Length: 222
Length: 311
Image (cartoon, rainbow over all chains, first blue to last red; front, side, top):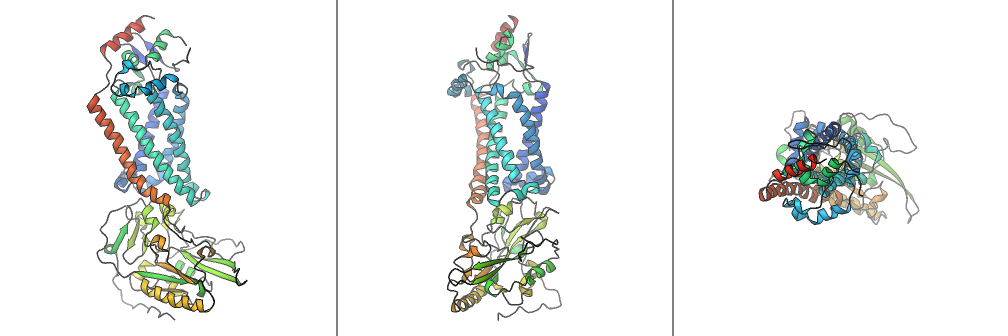
C-alpha cells in the first residue's frame, strides 16, 4: 500500500455538502505570513530591479527604507516558509502517479479531471510549486545575504556580489512567476481559496481534485 | 611647466554647468544635452609624484571630510583603502624592475576615474542618484542615493564606498563644484610637482604626449597614457612609466570594462525578467478566458456525499 495522504488535522464531516478540513489554523497563519512577506518582497524588490517600477519604493517610505527593509522581510519569509516546509514536505514527495498526471497536462488545463489519476493531498503541479519555491527561497536567502551590504559587505568580494545580485534577480523573477501560477491555480480551480481562508473545502471539491485523499479520509485507512 | 589655472576672482560666478548639461542620469530616460561641453580631464603623472599626500589633504579639506585616525601596519598607504571620507588615496608600490634591476617606487593616486561609460551609473537603481555631465564628470547626488551598493558592483575600479553613518555612496566628484566656476580640482591645486594637472581632455592628452616623450628619452620605453578604451576612456588619466603593465601600479586594471555579469544583470535580465512576469500573468488571463473556471459539479458533491455517508 502506498503512503498515507492524510496530514494531522485533516478530517471529513458528512452533511450537505460534505465538509473537509484541509488546513489547520496554524498552517493558515503560517501560510498568510509567508504570503504577505512574499508580496512585500516582490514589490520592494521590483522597485530596485527596474527603473520603471522604482515608484513602488514609495509604498515603503522611499528608496532608502525600501533598501533597508527588503532584506528583513526576506528573513521573515525564510523562517515562515521553513515552517510551511516542515508542515508540507512529506505529502509533497514525488510519486509515480505524479508523472502520469504531468503527462496528461492537456486534460489538467482543460479541466478534464475525470481523465487524471486519483490525486492525494497534493497534485503534481502543487508539488512542483512547493519544491521550486523551496529551492528558490534557499537561493534567494543565500544570494541575498551576499548583497546585504549593511551587515555583510566586508565578508564578500565584489565579484561574488556581482554574481549574487544576478542570481538573486533571476531567482526572484522565477519565484514571482511560480507565485503567479500558484495564485492563478487557486483562482481558476473554484472552491480552493476557502482551504486557506477557513481551512475547509467541500466534499465535492475533494472528490473532484483530490479523490485519493478524500477516500483515505473517509475510510480512515492508512 | 603646465600653465597654472588662475586664482578665482572675489565676486561670485554663475556655475558653468548644471542640470541642463546632463548626458546620463541613473535609472532615468533623459534627452542628453544637445550640445556637449568641452570634455575636461585630470592628468596624473605617476612619474612626477613624490608621494607627499598634499592631494589627499586638499581633498579632505575642500570637501570638509574627516578621516579616522588609523593604524600603521608598516606601509605608507594611509588610510589602507578608500573610505567614505577618503575619496583619493596614494597607493605605494615597491617595484623591482626585472630589466634594470632597479627598485622603483610607484605611487599612484587612486580615486574615481570618471569613465565615459560609467559602470556605477549603469548599475544604480535610484533615479538621479548618479549623473554624468556633458563635460565628462560623473557625480553622485546624495539626496537621491538609497545606499544599496549597486554602484560598488558596477564600478570596474572598485571606487565607491558606502558610509556606515548615513548609508550613502561617496567618491571623488572631480570637484565638480570648483570646476563649475572655472577652477581645477583641489588635489590638482595642491600638488607641488604638477604631477596632477587639469584642463580639457585634449589639452591633457597633448601634455601627456610631451611627458611620455620625455620619459621615453630617459629609458622608459613603455611609458604611455592610461585612458582605457574598455570604458570608452576616462576623465582622469594616468601617465605611467610602464603603461604596458598597469597592474603593477597597485592593481590598476589592465583593460577595465563594465563586468559582463553587470551588463547581463542590467541588460537582458532586466527586460526579460519583466517580460516573463507579464507573460505568466497574460497566459493565466488567457487561459481563464479560453477554458473558463474549473468548477465543482453537483455530481461531485453527490459522489462525495455517497462516499462520506457510507462510512
